[in-house]
Image (cartoon, rainbow, N blue to C red):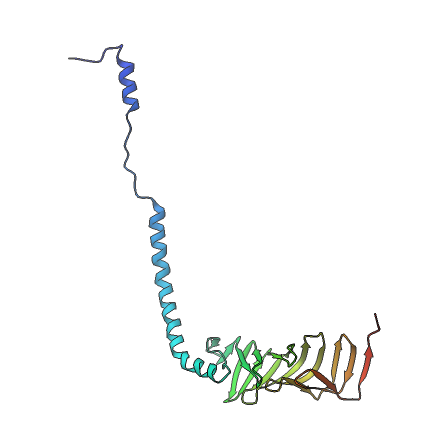
Length: 223
């Protein structure tokens, strides 16, 4: 029987060692994981997209009417608590007669009638005639939609862009007129100093504040 000579054995071993070895490589896991993840995402995202599209179709006539009339009603997309029957974090946007934007937001809103909303932690923002803005907030409030008025109560604070701040028990913001008023004791602070009065009224589209007396005014000293 023929064999490999001892002298040739290192050559044969070198030949065998030099041959490439082929192994069966199984499919890698990352592509499989990626496909499973895509299927999982599509399974849950497609129903959500479908619901959003249905809501958009249902709301379009109302939104279109609101835009044509110059104002947008309370957003139906705000979260609704089915147990309390209230809107959570609602937001309202509109424009006054001069096409200036105003906004109203709150933590919660309960409809108390066709044109009345009871609000918790309401915030109203008015753009004034001179281009500045006035913000008012309170712990509670009532928005009368047909009158474009927000009645604030319980710890009311109003802030005007020029740095004037006023505190009162109650106040009414009229978004159509761009004004605010209160018949309660008012404490005001601003660049001018401090002032205590029996109430205030904003006139000339909010550019002038009139305080009702008796009043006490302390002016800041000249710098």
